[in-house]
Image 1 (cartoon, one colour):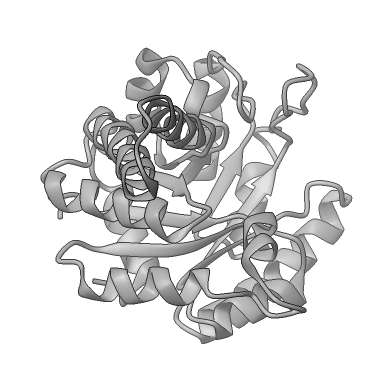
Image 2 (spheres, one colour):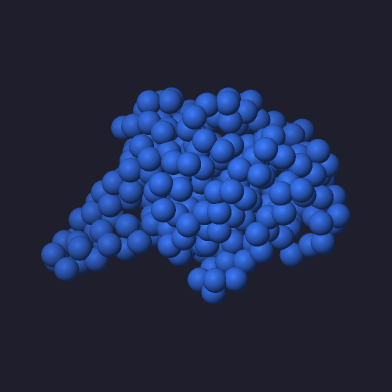
Length: 275
């Protein structure tokens, strides 16, 4: 089932000792495997899409069929599902996704000065809240394999909630997109103490599992998982191709590997049995 009150949903998660994996999916089968994993674990889950993956499946300026397919599957599923836009590049794109049925969006304003980022985030939050959707903001950057990123300033974190009106805040505390990493748990604790609101970790695929367990107890409600899912998909596809299987076999094995990863992450973050 699609979450009907996403802001209240996030606050409920924030008050509990678990977090939600937010799985980046790039096709229908990957989304289906994630939802099936959540059903098997009786867990709520976040299914999210990246703008580049939407563009890959789209024609012209349209968002393409992927959001429609995910919404259709989520509506029929017996567990709560949040459909989230990852790294939305601006007001117009976020609005298009909201109108297309996303019930949560992220505004990526990391390259803006703080005051501009707060103002732009507040605009998107106002629109999203009017459409009964939640908003994720961002402070800091998460790298991408170059080992260079800006850590979140703990003193600035409350501003995103107070002036940016976000429902959750992505913070940079040592994780990197697609890379093995350890979190600065002291910084995360300081941010949590000052922000007093739901936090998000990006680049969660490579974060040490001990740090994931600790983060769940420090205000983190959402941990993004993208690279691990993509690797699982490719691994399953490769296994099937090497075995000489047909296209059903390729898709089936890829989905099996995605389900395995998704179930493990749901268990790791304490989401299993929380539906």
